[in-house]
Amino acid sequence: MSQDPDDPPPVLYIKIVNAGLRPIILTSIKKIAKNSSWGNALRYPDYAQLDVSASDAIRDPETRRSIFSIKNTSVVLKESEYFEVSYGIDDFQHEVRSFFNNELHEATSMQIEDVLGTKIKIQDIQKNIEAMYQYKPNKAIKSDS
Image 1 (cartoon, rainbow, N blue to C red):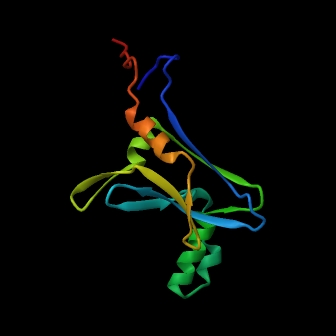
Image 2: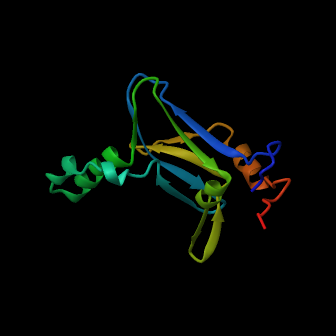
């Protein structure tokens, strides 16, 4: 990682804005590779603030899981509200690579998915992912010895 102020490490920054009139519920960020795709929750639960009370009284497992997900891992955006996701170079390396089926998969694109399964394209994402892959710091970190 570069410590050079003239060569700061890049950050992949994604801002999602609800430009519509109705609320939307965003559930995941999908990574798309050459022959595969996978996803992660858009946000991870804050376990200290975890709200399970709404789903505790529900017996149907599918409904219970859905309510838990909406309240704890999804993002609800009302009109004109926004949500931001950013990946520093280290986070990016972990987020865009996945190892499954005995193969390394590297994402070349990403999409946001809502609760209805609609896939929302992210403007210029392929160009920005490629720039993150290409980053090489000018100077290495110097150890204090």
